[in-house]
Length: 317
Ligand code: SER
Image (cartoon, rainbow, N blue to C red):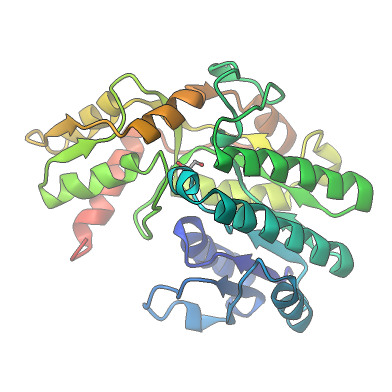
């Protein structure tokens, strides 16, 4: 049985990963660390919940020792568009927290999962079927922190034997906690507008393709890579994983099948457009499939049907 610490458990991924990990490993065995206060639905009180500023190593070390943690899910990050406004903060949160986790993990013999991103690629990376091992010279500070995070995690594995593993997440579409400040956030917000009966203003141009993934698949990836047989892993930090690639017109059409009167217009955000243009259109996830059995369940149609069903059932979205 694992003893897990999640750093960033009130964020977009952390809030749902907390629920998933507690359902698998038991509520008492998953410590939810948060920086911003957790959402107030009583969930976090079901198991240990602690305030942690991951840029302070002593706070991580204290919790890891107190709860005898053996696995850290380090989700602290500032997403791409916000990071461009606060580069120093993005660096401190993205890499400072990771370095702290890795040093504590080395001392206390923990495994560490830290997500990377499609943002770890840049405009001179092959755009279609982007290979696992390829050019990584991102144009954003977020992407730079992700590349450095991949290298640092591999370094701690080869140099110190810390069991680091990671995936490059595409844009993640979810219905519990909003992302905020990401370039791919439009693909979440569009569903909320459709269900509320409001027009959607899209910040990136038609024809802008990016990889996307529904949250249940992202959660399975985070769990399964940490459960996988280490002797099968040729790569570690980080694996390409893919589920679907679409542009704004494709997600709009998928939603219109459910809401024929739904209207989308464009008002391009130059920063988000530039970031999106520097990222791949679609990435090749063969290595993840071969080395640890990665396989997504949701495509655009199936995700759209589920998102709309869930959001319709919820009041005050
Ligand atoms: N969803 C992230 C962003 O848009 C990419 O990993 O910043």
